[in-house]
Length: 444
Ligand SMILES: OCc1cccc(Br)n1
Image (tube, rainbow, N blue to C red; front, side, top):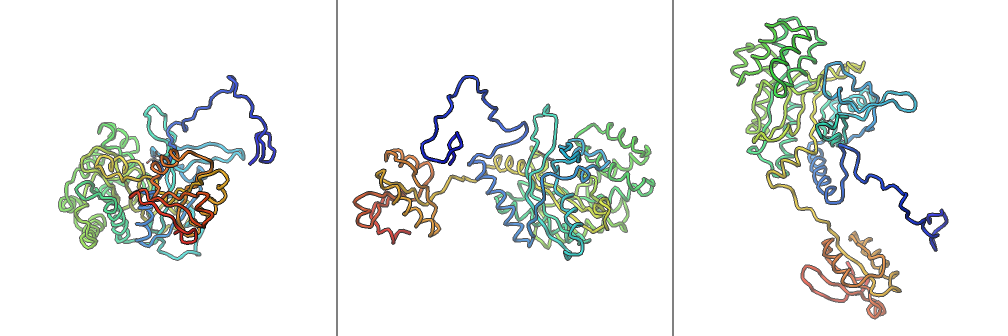
């Protein structure tokens, strides 16, 4: 280690005196962001390991992308909140860049980059941090981690059914049942079929959906006003709002007629849900449109049945995202699952796991001059795959026992002079109090 003066280790040069004029830094993380101290990191790893295990079960491959992307990936002109809150800036090369607010555009970028070198369908997943710059007036977070699963190259709703199945599998793994959570399912093709008779320009469709997604967040008169601003007639607005209140697929079929794609897709999805065994988790809800402009078909969101929390996860089909990046369109669907609401739900349900530290061995030399032998013992155990918390300086036994308790160490390995001379070490099994000596070579 380098001493403060930059010399090699040995006697450290005297530390500069801590004088009153050194301003104490703000030790909190930037507004809207989180630290993950060990106990929080254990919970995060538990959650992410479940994300990744489910992804593996479903045959998905892990991918990753830079958290910093070209701003151009996210500058859709559809009035989305995600665009209004873009964490963007100009870098030292005068490039417009942004901290990614979502993962799907990066995924699409990588698929396009790979081009013909990858064979479809692609089943890719990632867990990544996403950012938004929101005026902290609302005290909301500016970052969260999202689990994303995407299926690229499958046009049929079997892909959406598979994605929803993977989320159900995840929920079951962590103890969440269909009595805790459900999925509201619809299709943007419902809106498309209503609007087709009003000759709404194709490029307005995303905007209309983004406005309608706010239906439970702002007064309906504001929704109507915004829809008129984008060019919808009074009649079109009425028709749209009326179809959003449709309560069943049967009623929807009566409203739209039985020949449209929306009904066909949704009927097939609910039939596949039976076969996957998760029908009880799904309900048709015509008001679900989701807030991302690029969805084009089935959309879904996971919600807590007590209605206390924001959406747990959400996703849908986005068959035209690739062409917005100048590439050939590829049918695609995916979802995002944030790391915050699910933890709130688990806390509500008393399902947060107990995750203490776990150490196999606490190894301690009983005398200063035995430190090296303690290191030898630690190394032998580590080579056998045993975790070791090696006491690195001379400490009273009382301290050692307290540390063993705090770290949930299974065993205490005591390196004493007389034992060592006989090639032995002392072992204390902390759960039973059993105490014995063992030859070093037999330590495992
Ligand atoms: O789900 C919207 C979102 C995007 C980025 C960061 C956070 Br916190 N929330």
